[in-house]
Structures are given as structure tokens and as C-alpha cells.
Length: 174
Image (cartoon, rainbow, N blue to C red; front, side, top):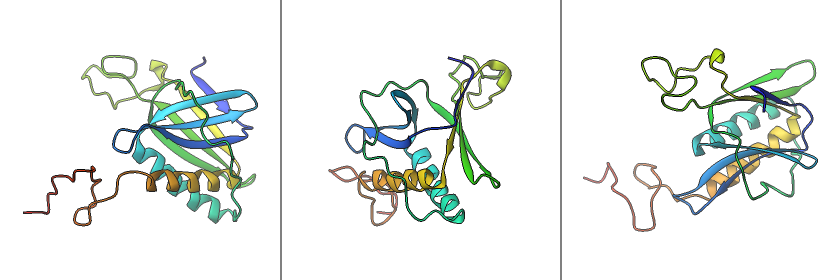
């Protein structure tokens, strides 16, 4: 695999999760034909990316999502875990590019001499993937991400934190 993978013509870009609420592992997955590329990520990354892509797609005039009926395909074999993500829009072509960068491992590539796992530098050879989406694909990702977030643990009515089936230690309950 190269240090940078570009996916310019994809059939699907979908979020997904495996496991029970409270113990789920989240992914984003791109598909083009029989090629499947999956990346592990955090729940918050999926939710925030979904909301942002919905806003961008709507501003570009997308009103009908290009939903992929298959969703995330299993078994999921992530290439790596996402550390940082960014989004760019090509105003002329009205295409959206999602860029994902690998999270550096402690004491591994991308970690400075101080051991801070969040200091990244391209000279360390961290993986990068770019996914080019149509506004309709971005809108579909946003809708799927919203559904995925709604399928998690219910929020506490007092503090908003997720509740386990047996409740939780609410900081507002004194």
C-alpha cells in the first residue's frame, strides 16, 4: 500500500459499526466494484463528518441522497485507524474530497521525540486516504451516520452522556 491512497470514483462511502451499543467499533468504508477499503475511526468522527457532509451537500444543492443499499460489508478489515480528517470542496466540479490521515502509534512513526501521539508529520510516512464524493453520496453518508448515531445508547436527560442499561454516574445528580 502506498503512503497515499486516492479513491476518485467510488460507488459507496458509508459509515458502519460492529458490536453492541456501548462497545461498538466504528468504521468508514469505500467501495468501487469488488474493491473494499475500510478504516477504523471514533464514533465522534463519524457523527461530525456526517453532519458536516450533510451541510456541504445541501449547500451544493443536493436534495436526494445516493444511498447504497448494501451498507458496510463485513467482515471488516481496516487498513488503519483514522487520526485526523479534513474536507475540501471543489467549487467548479462540485465534488467533495474527504481526507483521512492515519493516527500515529505511540513511539512509532509520526510521533515526535516528546512522545506526543498527536504530532504528525508527512515525513514519517503515515498513511493518507482521499475519497472523492458527489454531493448525493455525501448526503447519503450524512443520513447513514445520523441513523448510526441514533442506534446507540440513549442519552441521560440531565447531562446528555450515554447511559448504560443499568444507568450511569451522572455528574449533575448530586
